[in-house]
Image 1: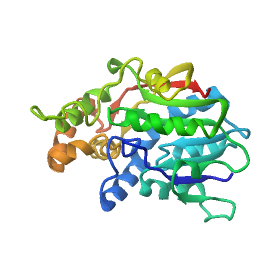
Image 2: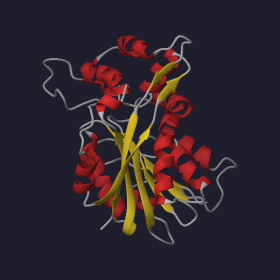
Image 3: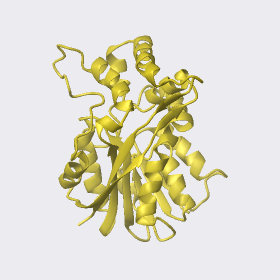
Length: 288
């Protein structure tokens, strides 16, 4: 395995998440919370897509918004050659630790630059993933440009996997994330509706594929429940997603944490754990 991890700023959007990475100290703490608490919630999504595509030794995979690298690690465990790009350097650093635990071998390229720096030297990619759910308006334009650029580095007919939230009525977390939406877009705000989380539309993934010049080729749904050891872990995990960063720009962290904890109370069980059933959706598209 020769993992390539690249810091890549998506055009016009800041990152595959809703906002630019936070300040360094907060970013490092959020990175650990993401890796230790939240990231594993999406493993069923990763595995379902990999099973469907038969990811294995013949796979040359590019992960857009790869974060701290768990999805890449799972693909590498199947024998795939993996590369990843992300805007958040602290998450990339953790991905490097995960993918090269014994240090940096000479054949591993870890560079900082544009998306083209992730291009494999011997053969083009044949799988591209954008697992981080489409969940805010500001990501769409940048992700479209990034997908278009990634398609240019892939073989014709390569699979491109897009991830997103399922129907709102089947995602318990949707009600909790409305706290982020409400705090980020207060009444009277001139840019209301343009920041923070928003519910997924039925055809969001298909629309994104179409904008990027991709051809839809099937979809699926998978259960991704969010489970936490306690309320404090749930608050930390959800804050690590970046979906509350816009809210934190206009409200004090104490207020955001308080309102988030209150929204989580209905999902706290008698033993103190927090459990929220969710359904996620993925779309398989093909490069032309």
